[in-house]
Length: 337
View 1 (spheres, rainbow, N blue to C red):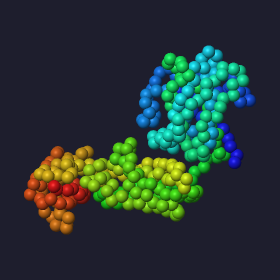
View 2: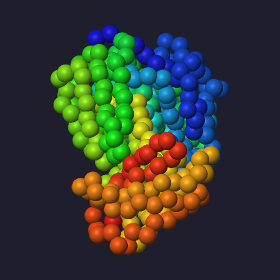
View 3: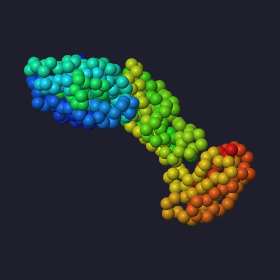
View 4: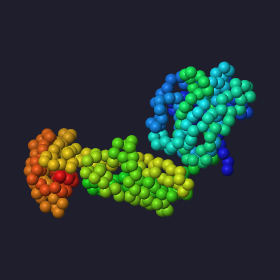
């Protein structure tokens, strides 16, 4: 298979662009004066790693990577700055990281014919971000550095799944319908459906097997079992047959309570339920409460501002709060305990 190289000069503790490149002649690194170094620790993009010295590459898209060749710091009298033991992570989104492994990088020899070395192999994994975190160097008391890194890639960008679209729409008060369609699938195994209430912490809520072009998934607790979250975020993690994975873009759905500016709490509630409206609608609210069989059990008008309902007399169970604003009425589920 035809291969290409992505060649990088090094800038430590920052995202580096594709355009930079260190001088290299016939595979021999002759740029002693153009070594980059970091002498101050900084926060690692991978939150599982400690404060330290690191390098992150953003290729701008997913590439199938194979070997990485490294030229360690080769400046005369300063080869002890070079990275020694490192941990290498990779990611498709710059947030969720997978560890490739731990490696010891060779010390440069300080000679004019220094040709670098093959450091590690991604074995064809689909990668957009590569993160190299230094554990130690070759003896310098404070500074860490490298000279050049080359990533070997297969020709072109290889995507196991190409999406036509991925969408999330609110169907009713607490149900979101996810739909997506693919243009092509190569060795795709299944899709994990993942959800978050803050866009940072994700959990798996289901999966769908590959093998068709149109997919759908219904989340019947979009905003939580008690429907008490204002926004739900969704993404797909597509898994290849060999276990590799990549993420879709993120989609969000907003609760109707958030959309119309009506908020109620707590949920579940015991003795009192507080209802408030935001925005410029400061008129009175018409409130009705229905039990789980559809029978109206309470009706009253609440004045503008924050209001409260005494629900102590209601039996424990599931109820629906109907809130009237001007000419519209909105329904929300709550639990009486």
